Image (cartoon, rainbow, N blue to C red; front, side, top):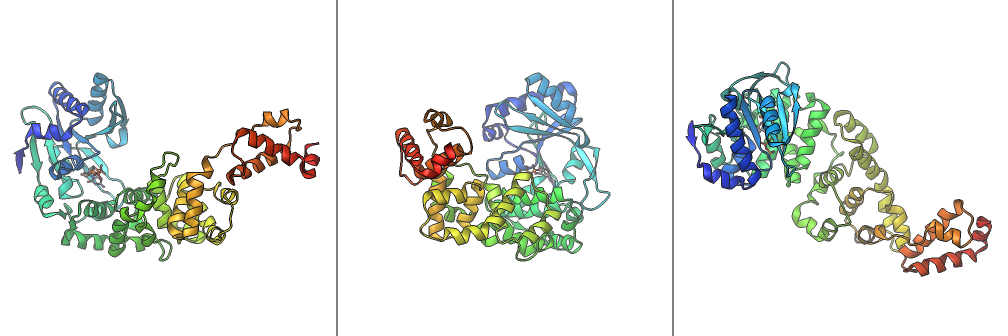
Length: 437
Ligand code: CTP
């Protein structure tokens, strides 16, 4: 089915001037290079849904890498090519990235493995795609500019709010599409169509998800954590039996993830919106999801999922601090300096995870105090000041500065003069006198 879209309406949807200019340059280059260009996938889907789209994928009937390189040279934009995949990524001055893909057919030699890529025309390229709603294309060049391709009833499925797979082996060929189906269903508030759901069940029965490489499985898992409604996605993945394929029962918690839901997180906006606090929400969701995980569960999870160093380190830190933290911080008599000592070694995301998961007023108070106040307190007094006070450099410097900081955290002293006076008062103590000799 081929129709035309209203090109001017499409340009006004795209909004950004740099995109509009790029589309006009693509049209011109197609003419001189003798090839065709299409915008395909998410951006077309989101255009028909009138939703903001972050991605723009351009399919070139021809060589996408050479096309992107020539365009990049002409516009002076950075282009990175990925030879094995016949793709290229262009970075626009705003930082926005655009993918250029050589129009292809994909052949899967083994389930769950990456396919062999064979350059082919647009129709083959649309057939290889995951869902009908992601197989829509708009031509960007020549007299057919604005021609709209809908080979699999994608537009109707957008109207009917349905996620529909294009062929029966799709989930076996590429089990990451199971995660994608759930992400789109939840994000767009669509239903996974009945036959598609039965194909997910078939793929799971054939252990398709378990046969994914740890890198592809981890990327799929992290992409679910990047969705706004992660907890609902996880509930659906759980209902479908996907989580049971990957994780041991009891090693994860969807309930903890719900604490990141918008309505619940509102009371912590003061933390999330504070300029002094930077939090990676994907990492925080990862920590909440694995909140009940034991050390041995985590070792097993790491055999099937591979996370970067910081993410793994944070989960380990969370597991290690969980018990200690809950027991100690439930006490009501801790001073700000004691809380500082306890929380300072932790990543901000680990503190926020413990704060959300513990759901305890005293703990909340301590964490807020640390994140909003204590961690930003800096000393004015320096080693040079200690030298001027006649203290011999050595281990004593660290001990004194720690004491001054503790007094400052506990709001016993405020100014530089207070700090110097505090050092002098410490030196009246025999313990410090002995150490400073
Ligand atoms: N695609 C696919 N199978 C996959 C991954 C991607 O068929 N396993 C195709 C789909 O047509 C998809 C396009 O490649 O639309 C681009 O993929 P991606 O950027 O991951 O998704 P978008 O559709 O752009 O959606 P979004 O980024 O909004 O999640």
